[in-house]
Image 1: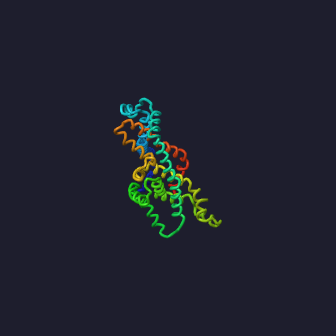
Image 2 (image 1 turned 90 degrees about the vertical axis):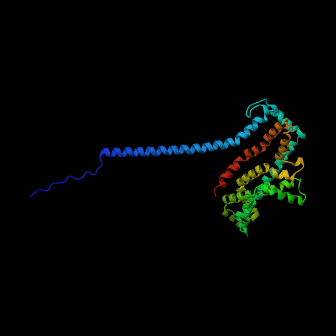
Image 3 (image 1 turned 60 degrees about the vertical axis):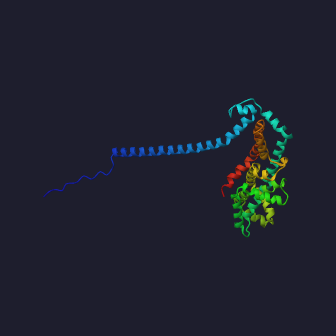
Length: 316
């Protein structure tokens, strides 16, 4: 009779060598994953920074050329490279601009400030009032009317110049300041932005409390809605100011009197003179440099408002 033999139990515990091999593999895998993540982050940062540098150069290089070119006379402008310094003639060029045609350039500059200022202050106020009404009030065909506003955003301004000229000629308004001031009061894009800002800044509970206190719609807007929407109002006003300042086709078609022209159209007239008379070229360049100074002043003075307006208006 055979005696049973006891079998040795299987050792299910992994050995130390197997643990070391597994650990080395996992370490290699994690190191490979972290290195790939680092390379991916580096590539994304490189792409983003490269695009930012290209975009910044696209905007800064022309202004830098304008600064260098405005310090040159006509001989240095055509005889030196773009960013080389010649004889410093900036103040002489400014004096020539001021003396040309009896100081007509500063008349153009004042006209641009007037047109852009009226469009920024009153046109933006109309846009804010319309956007507030579209957001807070319920009325018939509200969505359909707002759809027409969005269609107006898609239509370029140059496409409306000829119809507006025909309408202005019917009422005898051409070659007057009203041919410029009245159209700049309409800004469909500003109405759209104002509706977004109204939904973000003005709570419905605040207006309801004002109604319970006896405030009407007009008083609620000017006492509560407009102060709450002030960052959005400043942002829309800056967009409108820049748009009216750079507007070229509307005053070119509407105005014939040179004393009513904005600076953009006036400089283009001088540029036409520079072909047969090269001495006009430094004045064109210096005038272009002077024409951007009001825009810089407006952005520097109001940057606190429009920065907060852009940030808050982007999130509902």
